Amino acid sequence: MDQQFDRTGKDMGNIMLMEHVNTRIPDQSQAHLFYVSGMGFTRDPYLDFGMRNMWINLGRQQFHLPSGEPQVLRGRIGLVVPSLDELERRLETVARLLEGTALSWARKNGILNVTNPWGNALVVHEPGQFGKLKLGMPYVQFDVGEGSAAGIARFYEEIMATPACIVDNNEGTIARIYIGQEQTLEYRETPNPMPAYDGHHIAVYISDFSGTHNRLLERNLIVQESNAHQYRFNWIVDPESNEKLFEVEHEVRSLTHPMFGRPLVNRNPNQTLMRYERGLDQLQV
Image (tube, rainbow, N blue to C red; front, side, top):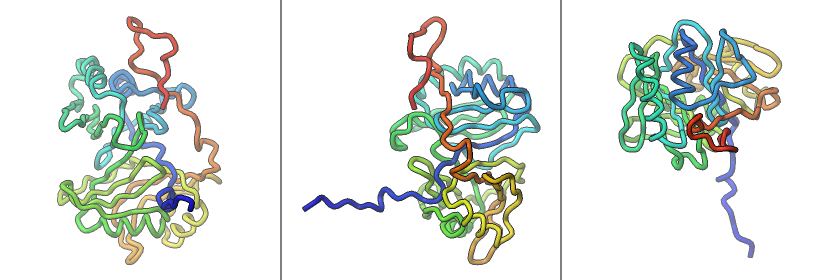
């Protein structure tokens, strides 16, 4: 008899990819020092290569960093890099040039907690914890009010048509939303007061583009009809009561968007003039 498989283990939800996090930054030179020289990521060589915006590649994900008053994501961004040791060495080299900013880092239990120059929290892991991911953004975790996780999970299950669950651990109660193969979006309950929303956003690609749009439109949640391939909404609501639970702009794109699956250049940050090795300029991710 043929071997039996659990086919549900290979199912995927509506949200296929969380592509980027967008936060404004006031100084491109400092952003370059931190994200490129320090973190070891790559400034996209093809798009938004000017003074208005900069795109930073890491694996299949990006940071979008338009110029302006700094924005701080209310939570933390999970990252994977090839080596925490190499990352710490790079951060040491840029620390003096970023004195007077919020830059800091501390290593504990195999994780490097980094605060970027404008106060955004990055939780950096080495490969092995998120499938085969060697470089990228496996999760974004937002802090939300107590009692809101269950309603947030229902929103993503019913409105966004993607798997979600509630996790209770030493971090508290978390609504965990499953994206593609190696990503999650998380909402962690906290008793702490919520900072005011400053306009930062995330971008996702979904398969049920029109159905999701209809469900959001029924609740008057669409805030921008960007173009044929994209729309935006801000509020996460409880589908049972329509109560507003958390505000963060979602830039929602179709799988027919011309930028879906666009190959991103990822350089090898260990290549230097003094220890250059031919053929190792680009990371394979």
